[in-house]
Length: 386
Image 1 (cartoon, rainbow, N blue to C red):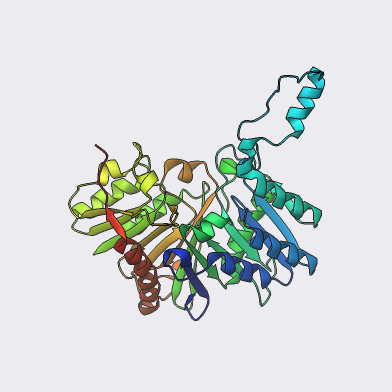
Image 2 (image 1 turned 45 degrees about the vertical axis):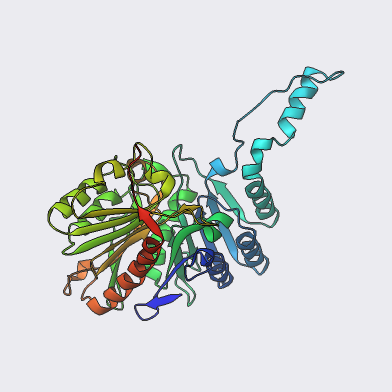
């Protein structure tokens, strides 16, 4: 763990199995264990039994736990099916057997279903999303439902609450000990609980909050079109942009902004997931080989599955992170969040958070760039498929 802004921001990178600093599963379990009154959980997928146990334990000690999950991780892969009646079996009996027998393809979601059943048995209010695209959130609001408490906090980042994201995929988590940040996510959670997914409601105009000299700005997709915010922050670069991202599609505007920044003489270095970066629709097709742009992919070492970050560092002043991949659907139709930490400007107006401590912003950017450097050190240059 690393602490910034007088302890009001905590940052974690994982997993330890791949050489990073933190056990992200333990980070989430400990955060949940610190709840006194309420937990509001919005996450695409929950299949980690230790995290599920922490939530059930919280409910057992009297914490009110509400949750929203992506329903696709609870559905059968193949949907409804039929079986040919066995000898002596009626068509009706065969239909019931098909309906009540687990399929081999259901193994992917078996753990998630078992955890869901345990949640419901233990009085946790769980709802599934109604976004026909992707419910991609990963956040927990702790001890805040309209009233601040000493333990009010917000946990978010790129990691789903799964064994793979916590132990085999490269990810980050950030905890904000600030009731104003928690309140922004609480408002988003209230929309989700009301069934307002996707482009159904715009929400409040994003605000910037000053945490001990470090400005923090929160945006939600698709309400706030956060891709434009990422592009805006990139255009402030005077020297360099470093990023690590799972899915980066040419359908986003971020690759276009990178080309502009690189043409202006700034260096752009990105580490991409080996699988996603090789897709025909990936932005690597446009970025590879351009002056001032360096693309890398992690080596396929034992235990490594995915680079799952959605992380960008701009000069020595700004970090952009959260759940959102660099794609058009993530910006326009998915349920996502991003947060912007830091600023290059020392004297921001009050509406933008007020005076900035540039040294504290530099500490945060240095921390996340160090992790990108570490990943880059065990990566190879990206080579376009022949």
